[in-house]
Image (cartoon, rainbow, N blue to C red):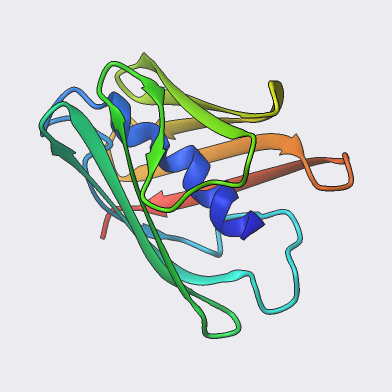
Length: 157
């Protein structure tokens, strides 16, 4: 759950999109060779994942599908207003957890995760100038209160 949540949190960026020409819109494939994740439970690491970002009315909608090493499916879907604000997940988040998004510029979105009013992680999501790579760098605290960092690299097929 923690890995799915970590991956999905930084991907709430869709809510800050400006339109169909926005560099975040489209289908992205996770490049595991270029990504570096904090350790996860055995078998729970991501094996493969596809991210689809699209606009629906005044919301950006994100759908993430994939498979973990143990063969279990990953399906996360959420939306957030194009003006930024709270990320709305289809499945409830753990109690006390709130995720918000903020557009910093055309190619950068920042996500902040709060637990019981305290910031526990930040993610900076940047699309490359050529629009082919999405780099999501996150830093936060694990369940033991230790600082962990991850970088996910997504590419357009």
